[in-house]
Length: 146
Figure (spheres, rainbow, N blue to C red):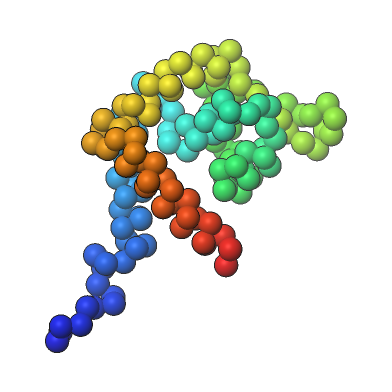
């Protein structure tokens, strides 16, 4: 090359950095979630339910930016773990509502320790993580507006 940057250099690609960062961060969550039997996607479902419940499968899918076919197996496994229940809505039996069980609500106490644990594992403080979150949210918005 003659002084011009290679536009196809792997290490300069945003998609590559995001892919490696996502895999790496999720891998750091694994040992933190293992004691309570959760995978990272299941943890995201639980976060949504701790914030708002009951939620329909469709609402959960929308919140998590997933399709219902991806959310349903996660819910089945969470139900098998005893953290959630699924039942038909009394208002519209076409709608499947998801609620936390007592064990699911109690799990929140452990989950409240996870953000601090992850900050330590990542070696990043709250300000750095807020800035990273802001940048990622901007990126997500940009992709959704296309």
